[in-house]
Image (cartoon, rainbow, N blue to C red; front, side):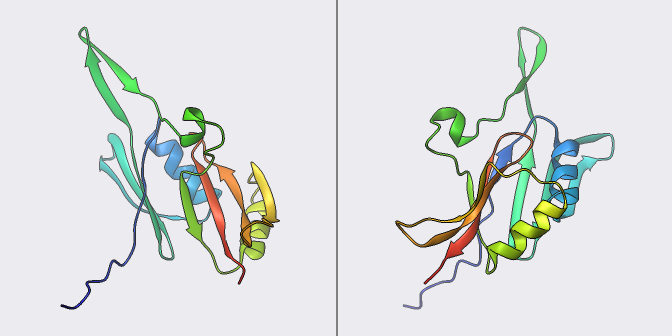
Length: 140
């Protein structure tokens, strides 16, 4: 039997404000907004893409006692601070990407470093909802 290929995986984050999130990923991280909607008047879902990475976002609301309430984002670190990554983005040159992000004023929650225990080099940023994104790779 031939083994089927999985081409990629894309995280799906619950966010507070889809248009603001899409702007952050476009303006600060250089992603392209590939979908926002379902209509210009009601943007509760969006998708961004940069090279092979795609991330989806959705703002959720619920009705409680006749009133609509929002469902808040829940990044991993808010569950337990040691779990600071919500997504690992494999990049061939973390140094170049860190320099690009720094030139756009992106704040790093963990600066560019090489971890001694596993040889992974990279950095972490938190998006506007607190999701931790690790950008890096294993330095063989």
